[in-house]
Length: 219
Image (cartoon, rainbow, N blue to C red):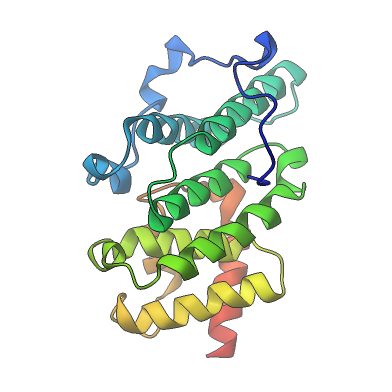
């Protein structure tokens, strides 16, 4: 994600060789929004998306507090595995890279405060914006406006205030007219779309709502 040569990955150290919990197999599924277009994505990406969905399910458990060190270590290893595998996926097109980066960012924001408050969300959102700008005229997005909406609002919500966030706002304004068929969207309608992909009420709601309000204050 930083553009530097990779020295280690998720298989380098035994401690980082995370594996799925066989007792929670029901968590490792595709969210509905990804399921209906699973044939568009590489198989390795599909498996990563299942692991992100499991991370989301764990975060949404009422009993999960992320206070147990062993529990935190396993979650962070799961996130590290997700991130490492996403970075290793083939760069087939700008729109596919945008999907990878959207997934990476959503996974970062499902983890502990170390991940959420590190430089990674701002760094990834910056690169995500660049790939979305590069691919904005691609016909792929014409056929998948809900996927694009999820990526744009994810990137905007988890980007720092400044040029990057303003860039997401500008792209949203363009796409609300070109692809979303409305100049704005209500918060309940937006949440209905986001829940089709990656969504955690506890981990995402406050920042997504803040970004949505920020957009509507300006319009």
